[in-house]
Length: 392
Image (tube, rainbow, N blue to C red; front, side, top):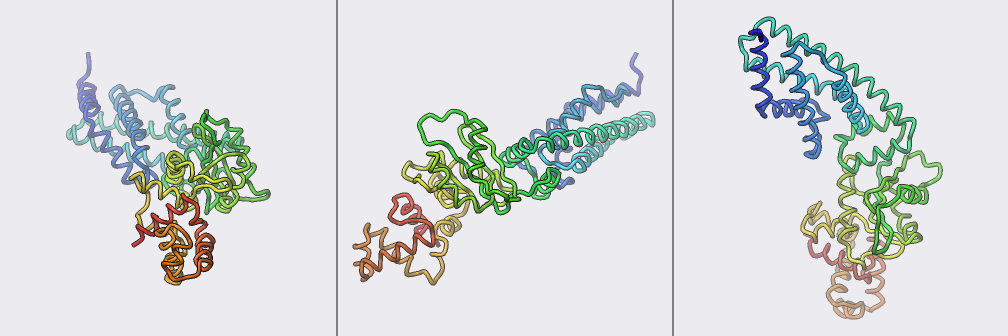
């Protein structure tokens, strides 16, 4: 026969498990009180909710039955800890999240059973302290083991780090710095995120060896800043020092590859950089690709603008494309660009500006030198035309 105290606990348990607001309250508290979790994007919150729902059900069950965590619970906790260690979330932050969750659990029980019997209250306290102690030990051990595994296989560790950066799993630059320090590496800052693929109609999934081969071709011998490579479908994704962008075009051209190199995003926005580059390769017309040249931030932002989902404001896109041409001292070059685009040829533009044709061509060469965009190239002329049109 079920005792009255156990029946009272079971009633509270059923009520709380059936109420989705309890899990929502736990997730909200963790999100607000633990800085690392406060910066998580929407793609990561479903995982937090799933863990909160599982933890709520298990802890309430232990309270009702006066039970203890089982081997299957411990395996799941170790798995969660290993995943958090791999994605760079500090163990202290994870343990604090569980303590915050335990506080919310206690408050929710108190709200539903304001006259909780002393035996039930003591059982709840004993269960939570024991569970948190066990959880802390299991997670700390799993973190240490995962760190050792990652350190032993540096290439794999760097690839996992890049995978997590691309997926947006790092909550902050601080968390990223902590993970880099544990691996004993220094990430490039500024960096170049290069997304590249072979030129051709058929593009099967890329082998990792092809990506690492490209990485070796672009790496600078003796550079202390780490570079890493991974694959996404038919494309290689490389994290390189910012200066590597200048060499990327020649290296890719020699291999009959094309790519997009993003250099203007911060380390906590690698996911944004990857999306920009991947979308640019998806949407760029064939004539945007030229041997020896890769698409850049400016190309990617123009393509995003044309696609109706800009990642930057129009004035920022204009500055990315035009660069120094926006300076008041370069007004004569902007006039030359406008006349050339509108008139369609250097000779016609020179007549509009009452210049000798050679003077106009000199201005076009200066525009090319300052922006790395040749107004005579159809794609680059289009990007310059869009930029001067949307410029405030």
